[in-house]
Image 1 (cartoon, rainbow, N blue to C red):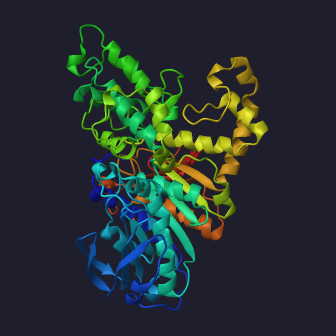
Image 2: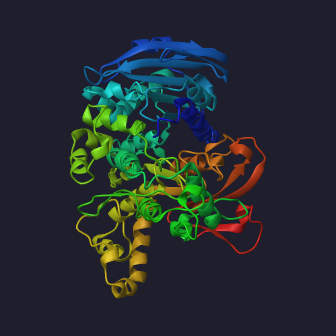
Image 3: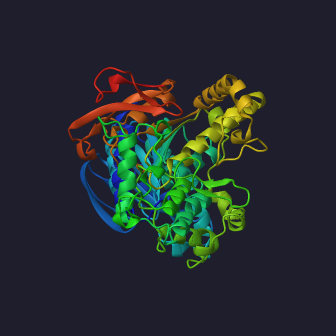
Length: 572
């Protein structure tokens, strides 16, 4: 969600991921076309919607204007572009696009793509890539300009970005697709990462009949905790000069933790749960000082022990309850610095406080956090309902994924949420057993006892039963939803790990699994091969292959064979 990632870069990341969706699809027989493209301009759509254009483009190349910006595309099929504005409220302006390949070029599927940052743009390049691969596609700017100031004192823009823009776009797209082709889509998918991952979870949780398959990567699902715990808390912590880290110290931390935890063959930390590196190993000794950049002071060590890991991060100073988990030491450490210009200060100011100059320096993680969580806008923004039973009852399938090195929405937030879903799916008896040995520091279960406070003898006595109960709840959850862990990946991609599943239309392993699940009833495997290529390029030389494992399984070397080949590993 960091605004320093440009929308152009976001679209570069999203396009290959979305392109992989269509590459995986088995062709569905074409159907007769319905109305002409231009005639769609007269279609009446819900939610106070105005169609502002319906234009046909011939195959080959097209110069398409989206939100006032012209983009020239090449290699596209003949297609129909429809765009418009939906106004759920008097001050709304939700821009959307629906693009449809003509005739037999359509594979019968519809995909809606999620946004990034705080939205405000639609990528013509991404839409063009998807129609080339046979999908009818839709996207929205979320009713946002992409600027925090546009939200101030505008409840319509706030609500549109929070929730209303995404079902409204679906409700525009399906009638347009139906009118254009003379039939409804055969299957409907939603794909998004980061903010788009939040949108994906909103659709699964609140609109369970809309999509057959949903892919949610690194979802920004809990903004009031993410922007405060992930950003404001760190800004506060490192505003203290005694705690601040130099660039050399941040590099030291990242390099030494990686060296201790990574597989020497690939340079990838397969699973931080298997690593016991401790930041105290960097404490300055002898005559060495923190100024050298080669060690840390006692204050810096104790601070980082609070910052790192699943049980670190921001906490309520009164109750001790975790607000947001900590980060991994081998992730990008750019956030470990005081940053008065942090864009997330503006996000909170525009969406919650109607004040871009609010006093973040004195934010109180007890009283202020409780007030923030209670705001009506927070209920619209948050996508943390663990109950997917309506989505499941409609046959929906959800695949979530996150990079173990996510440097922006720390990986433990997604892990904790998925464990929250698992615990929700437990029977009452199994829930009590789970609580004996499985502790979720972030998401509440209700009036349960923290495992860390229980008698060790009791925990040991019930260890097998507790593990079995967790396994049963996990199996129930996996009937509808699975979480995949990408070793070595950052936020929505990047990093040192294998990422063919979001890189290239020839791969798309994660989306192939989702499509196979939705359309053929084949549950995704606990692990499947993915490829690392040079420079993270879709066409670069293969450097190694590995397995992408479903949570809570971990990648394990089988003890023999080439460490650069997925055949030498298993997910256990």
